[in-house]
Image 1 (cartoon, rainbow, N blue to C red):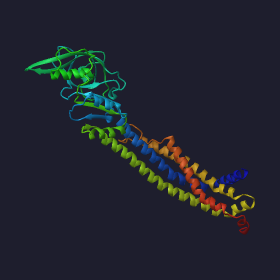
Image 2: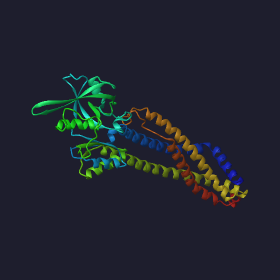
Image 3: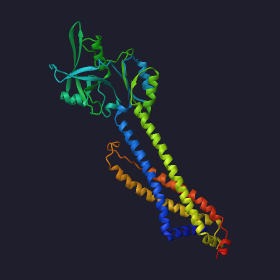
Length: 400
């Protein structure tokens, strides 16, 4: 143990004595490592910015059928049972999902808006309680057109023509909330499913002017024209899109955008690995040659240490200690340079970031860089250590 401490002390003293050479080695390590850290930060930042841009709006995880079909209760039960589905609810026919909204019963110019079924857990209404009975949640655009606010009672008007005569179903509905603008950009209202089905039944002539109770449950045998579904994660969109298309259901999704994002993540990881491998190989060769040359240059001094009683194991610690010291110092300098450059890059107004940091260097990135640098330095030192261990004590006497 004392012998190892002696070798470590001599190695560090030798590195301090040759300050210029030591600084050149440290700067060389930092010059290779800093760009790799910055590249890792850019990869993480850019991919995270794009991913957050997609995930910030639930629309990126939305799956909607394109053409009207007939979906029964078993279809929705199967969808809700899938672990990759976060939310699913039926849709009525597009033409039946239109209603008029007015603040007074006597209004002759109601504002037309789309009708969407909703329930608890709807990603578009995160943070808002789902409407019940004769309640509705208005989109921001519809609320602005009407001048309505939460807590008011408005009129929902559904019209149909029977025998050439126009009939109107007018329902008083309470505005339970106004959805944020990002939830739905057009004039529209979120309704409980029974209320939406009532609007469809009235237009189809199934329901009369006198509506059923607000809490009437849908007929279990009822068929629905479509659905609105949300995947749990971005990655799940691809699988749901694929499975539904295999069943012959045409859907509209952001699967292509998600696949492009995942491909970008993989390609950037491959590019980073290739550049890191190339830079790391150059770093290992350069450091190994430098340490080997240093051992050769101090061969006589090391031989004298052997003659004075230092074992071959002690000589091995000489280049290993210097390599470790250079690696730690170089990694620290590289981290400072990379973090400084990250601050500059994140101040740039780049479109891909959209207010998010372009570069995101984490503590894990710095720890990984330092650990890999230290491991690489010790590998490089192994060749020099092998040469040091082979020095015989007699070489010091011969060259004296």
